[in-house]
Length: 517
Image 1 (spheres, helix red, strand yellow):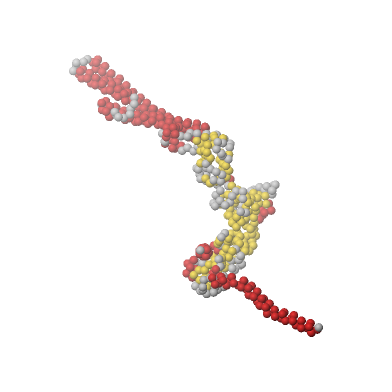
Image 2: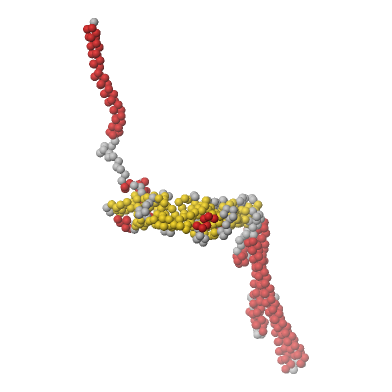
């Protein structure tokens, strides 16, 4: 029984030992399949790649690949005149500051109103527009301006008439003054008539020539009577009558000459006076238009009065155009078409923003720290531009302390040519205090701005035939003269490029553009 069991056991073990090699083969096959599954795609990509030497592993970035590194050959270095200095700690006055506000320069701000009542016809500018002196802002239809303009044209036409009259009277007086000496010299009437035929004499031609002709006839009669009397053909009485007739007509001629001379001069004086009155009337009418805000050239109105004839037919007499009194920006606009505009109505507010005011209130506790601020200059920073400092001129420091706020008002003015400072912005006024403290500084010429961030170039060692300079970002503070305070990024003694930094910046920009290409 036992033998049977033992033999059965052996029989049962014999099949198990025969399965072991097959199990090991199955395991090896599974490992091989897994290996091929993982590695085969990589091998296939390698096989599909272009033939060639095996790619070398990517090298570590070299200094030449550094985006802020600039290399110059010795020749470029010499041409650029690059020079370095050490960052230096200097004793500088402590910086104090008070909160302020950007305001419009009140001396360059004007409220534009109409001087004459009217209806807005057209608005030529919009809010925020920049205008030049003389640019049209708004056009109104104004009956007052129309009436004044019509009156001006009427006065100009009267001036034309007065000028013609004065010119005629002046020429007549001149001709009278010429003919009288000829009459007194006894020139024959026929010669006089021919000589002055084309010259203006007016009524004096007949008056003077007639009197002179009568006198000339009487003179001939007298001579004839005397001749006949000498031959005893006539008696004494006819000769006496002829002589007295000649004397009477001679006296009448002299009286006529004197009166003609006076009357001609008087008529010229009256015409000149009328001309001056007509010119004064034109000036008065032009000034009335100026009072209403219409800019009229008085000299042109007088010199070209004849233009009134054309203007009366073609001119838009009620048009009243208001123009900008100076260069500036429209900061308030109230005018709209078809609106009635009276002299009390605000149409625009125009301000020159090339300069702005900075106002602040200095606390009473800080007054002792700023003894020399009046009449000097300060620095201004704006919240909107934290990295920028504006130089400002002190205009006034209040003489009286506000008992409510316990502050003294301060007013400064700063340039705003690029219009970055806008009225209403918050600002901070900075000034030097009475004490000093060490601060790390570099020359202002060493500071460059790349991508809107301040930085300096520092030498990074020289290779054979070339020099290397690296751009380092720094944080800067205020400017003191030709030096800039460094807040962080440098240590005392660090060398920076102070001469030729702009050349290095240009080279860096060109280098980066080449890398992008």
